[in-house]
Length: 166
Image 1 (cartoon, rainbow, N blue to C red):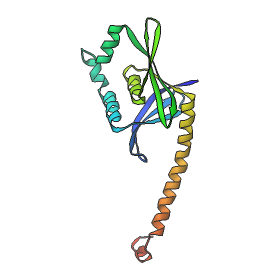
Image 2 (image 1 turned 45 degrees about the vertical axis):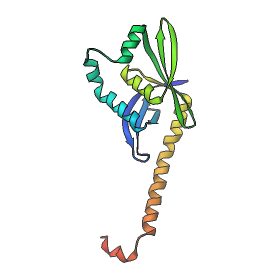
Image 3 (image 1 turned 120 degrees about the vertical axis):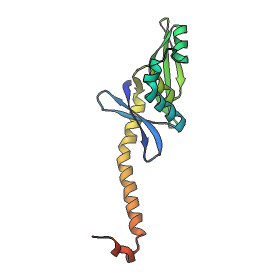
Image 4 (image 1 turned 30 degrees about the vertical axis):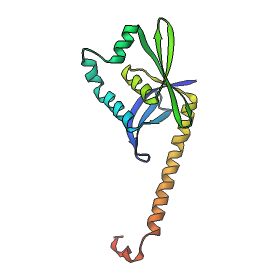
C-alpha cells in the first residue's frame, strides 16, 4: 500500500544539523522526514525558489526537452522502501502506454515531484518507520534537555550561586 503525499516543507533539522524535506499526506495524519546532504539541499532550494523563473524561460530544461522528443512523460514518483537507513526511490515514465521505472536518489525523486507537480507515493513500510522515528523525537528531546540540565547542576559552583537573582 502506498500513501499519496506532497512536499509540505523544507527546513533545517536542529538536532542533526542537516536539511530535511517534510512529506505529509492530505489529511495530515502521516509525516515522513527525508534528510538531505548540503548539495541536495542546494538543488532543492534552487528548484523551490527558481521554478517560476524556469517556467518563464523559452527554452525549458534538458530533461523536459528530452522527454518531449521521446514522447515520454513523468507519471509517478515513489519512495519505495528503506534499506540500511537509506530510502529507495523511483520515478516512473510513460511512453506509448508502457511504463518505465527508473531507480533514483530520494532527492532526485523529490525534485521531480516539485518540477512536475506530482504527489509522492510513499510505501507503507516507510510511513510506519517514519512514525516510529517521530514518536521517539519528543522522548529523545526530553532526555537530552534533562541530561543538559543535570550536567549544568553537576558543574555549578556553589560560590557563584549568589550571582543569579531569585
